[in-house]
Image 1 (cartoon, rainbow, N blue to C red):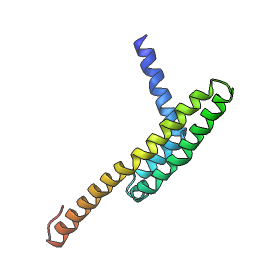
Image 2 (cartoon, rainbow, N blue to C red):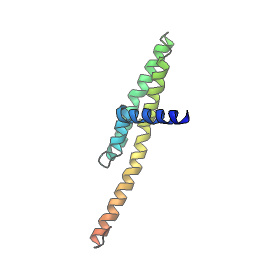
Image 3 (tube, rainbow, N blue to C red):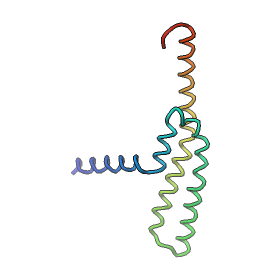
Image 4 (cartoon, helix red, strand yellow):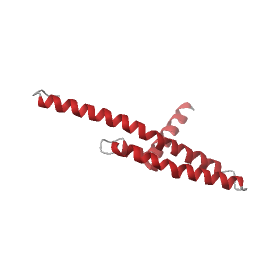
Length: 112
């Protein structure tokens, strides 16, 4: 039973990692070329939070309760977009420090 649940969770994670837009975006930002876009991507949290707000307004107006699942999804995606900014900034600083160290090693005549 545990093995079945483990395999199911692995397949669900792989499917979400491959097809969910925020996961694709966060993977693209974690590349060296995409690190500079981490801070601007934080602005994408605003539409997600607005969509969550609109869903709660519809629910309060007598809408279906399953919209709470969308609210949860929108808030989760907004948190991912907010979090990717500081993470990408730290990764960018680390990448530039490594590149600077390699550049100094090359100028000094050593191999990195």
